[in-house]
Amino acid sequence: MFFDDRLATVLRQRAMGEGSLRTQYRQLLDLLGRRRIHAPGDDHSLLAAAWLRMDALAEAIPADARARMIREPGWRFQSPDLASHLADHEPEVAAAALTRADLASEDWAALIPRLPVRARGFLRLRRDLPVDVEALLARLGVHDRGLPAPAPAASDDAAQASAETAARPTLAPAPIATRPAQPIPLHPSPANRRDRDESGRTEISALVERIAQFRRSRGDNPIDLEQSPRLPLGELAQRPDRTLSSFGFAADTAGRINWAVSDVAPMVVGTRLFGADDAIARAFARRQPISGGAVSLAGAPAITGEWSLDAEPHFREDGHFTGYLGRLRRVPDPAARTPGPEAREADRIRQLLHELRTPVTAVQGYAEVIQQQLFGPAPHEYRALAAAIAADAARILSGFEELDRLARLETGATRIEPGESDLAALVRRTAAQLDPVLAPQGAGLDPAFALETALLIGLDPEDAEALVWRVLASLGAACGAGERIGVTLASLNSPGGQAMARLACQLPATLAAADNLFAATTRSAESTINAGLFGTGFALRLARAEARAAGGGLGREGTDLILTLPLLRETSIFADTA
Image (cartoon, rainbow, N blue to C red; front, top):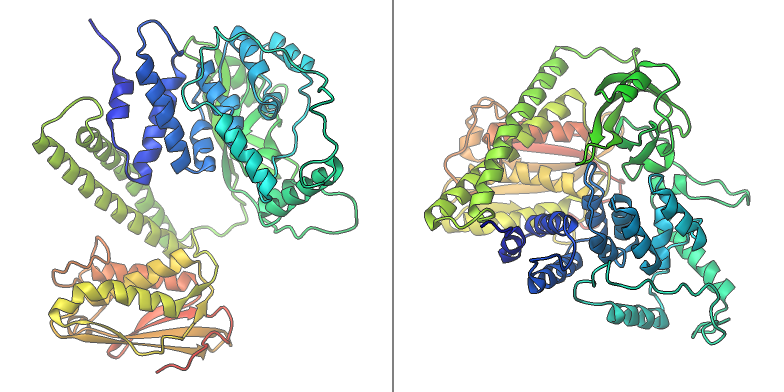
């Protein structure tokens, strides 16, 4: 006799890190999406625990991350209970769930009257619902999308949100089939109708405030700024010029795009991919894969132009054709510069890395399955070995990422993101991280500038932190016993007049004796400090490529290693250097 213990196996796992939390949430989506509550043979307490675990995970995972997991292309679920449960969550989660639900007509008929009014509106975005379901939505007056709920800024809003949360059931919802449909109050009773809320605002003023909050919350996002409607009051929105190079999509059986990644969807949803008699139309009719199809898009400047289409037909488990899943890539400009030998070599390296990632990722995945006992108990020795293999695979993958980043930077395929970072603060923080490791041997870094010094550079904080770590960790790993590294900061003007930040670090004796600091053969002695998988020479070469991509440089001047980066503004040093 066989039984399905996958749900119990998932609930036995203790999710600690962010990755394991998301993995467990995705596993619960799969398992709860395939079954009905209170099916014959189900353990009701186990199902209740699963719903509780899902709600607990939802509090730890951001709503946009959960929505992305639900919106993954090709994933659908057939459980009306899961649709009902997720419809009470955040708007983006509810919208994603009701878009991915693949229910029978009778399940929709029982579910829709019980959905929150806000959630019903999301169903109007679908074009694949049965005719009777469309008619039910029309009878319920679901015609358009509404404004998002206001942020709970005032105390009365917070109290109302708390009351709604308290009223929400904490256990699994009752079976869809056994719940009688509730009558729909088409006309609110006079007792429930209010002209003013508790704060004294009229309904019109509250609506105006919601619109203002809606526009304020979207004003800082350039993508949302392009999509948001504006009244013709004469003002001009500052919209950055941008173009897209590729995006994923899903198309229905008629060849119209009905899903795309979130920042592109408003510009392409509803667009038909083919005409009456082209090759793409013939492939659609024959349910064949499409490779390199020519598509011309018009509309917003970000998508206007010629595109190359790669797509695969998609079928449900019962064999019913549901459309295509694919990707559109912008056709490169023929007038663009032909890549040189270095660019072609870097492209071959990136392709090789892509081929190598697949087996390493598979090894890592199988090791994690054994270590976490996802498919059953395993001896402790096997779990320890699997954990070591997973860690080694993670280090190898991180090394691949460094190789890929270097290839992209040296060929101009990627760039350092602009931003604002305090170089002085990054140097102080990195030196403090290295100090506990170097202190036992009397070594360390000595920043020779005042604590109040601030030197603002025009780099993204994450990119700037990674660059400073590669430089200082490489020097720290090469330190001998009692060796102290002096670090100074200054500002200067480049020959072109650009204000630059200058970080000067003394070279340890082992590196000062090297002929070429950036050679692959340059390696430090054994150290617990890890600047990169491939040694000091490679780490410094990657740091040099990052500095050059940011508009600066990294080079050797005598016994010093000099890093220069563009200043955000010339008045960036607020304290005199020591």
